[in-house]
Image (cartoon, rainbow, N blue to C red; front, side, top):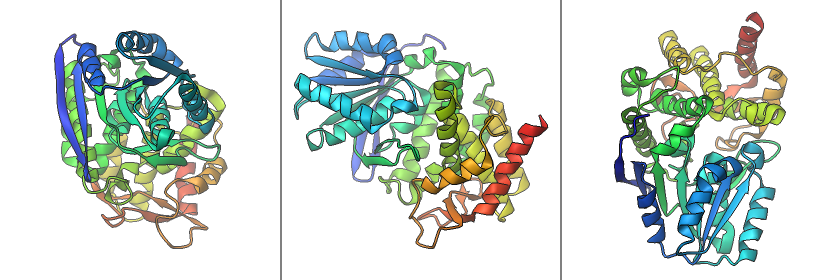
Length: 387
C-alpha cells in the first residue's frame, strides 16, 4: 500500500431518519483522536481483541487517557468471543471501573469487537454513545454501515441482538496494511456480493481492481470503500432495520453463516473466514437461482469468475457434511419473515438477474425446498471429492 497521506474525509450516511458521520483517511490517528475527544466523555471504554490491542489498542488508550480516563477491554480474537458471556464480563468490568451514562464505548477492531461493543453500548444504562474504529476490510466496508449489533449462540450466528446507531465511524485505511491475506479476501468477498446483488453495472470496473495476491494500493482501497458505502446506502436509505429491501445484503449468508459457524467450531480462527464462507454461500444461491428459472448460465459463471479472482474455493470445508449444514440452517436468523409453513423449506435471497432479487423488492426472499438446497450442497461436496 502506498504511504499516501489523506486527511479525514466525511460521508454523512443517511439511513432512514438517522445520519452517521463516516470519516475516513490514511495515517490519520491524530485527527481520529480529535474527533473522539470532541465527544466530551467522562470515560472511554475501548472494546477490542488481544491482537488489535497489541497493534493499536495500547497506543490509542495512552493517547486518550492524557485527558480522559480510558479502560481497555480485550478478548481472544475470533467468533468464539462473540458471546453473551464475554459481553457481560466486559460490561461488569466497565461498571465496576466507574462507567456512567456520559461514557463512550469505542469499538476497535474487526466484526467481533464491533458487535460486542455495539451491543454493550446499547445495553449499558439503556444506551450510551458508540464510536466505531474498524481495522478490517469486512468491518470497515460492510459491518459498521449498519445498526445491527449481535452476538452468537451455539445454534447460529447473530441470534441475540438489537439495533443501535453509532455516534461516529472513524476509519484509518492504514490499519488495513497489517491484515493477512485471508482477512483481505474476506472483506473483498462482501464487496463482490454488493456488485452481484445490488450494483451489477460496476462488475467490469470491480474486475479490473481484483487481485489474487490481494495487494491493493491506496487508491483502489478508496474506490472499494466508496463502492461499498454507495451499495449499502442504496438499499438501506429507507430500510434502516434491514427487514425489507435491504435484506438483499444477506445474499449468500444463509448457507455462508452455517459454513462459517461449523468450520470455526472445529478449527477456531484457522477455520474458513467470514467472507470466504459468504462467497461459497453465493455460489450455492446462484446455482439454486439458476435451477428455479432465475439467473442464467452466464450470470452463474460471473459469480464463479469474480470469486475465483480472489481465491474462493469451490468446495465445502473438509469434514463438514451436507446433513450438518441442513440441520443448522433451521436456526437461520431470517426465519419467520415469510408466513407460510417452513417445515421443509428455507427462506433465502435468490437472484432473478444480477442486481435483481427473485423475491419481491420490498422483501426479497424466496422459499426454497430443502431437497434443492441439499442437491446444491452435494454438488460442492462432489467437487471436493473429485479433487
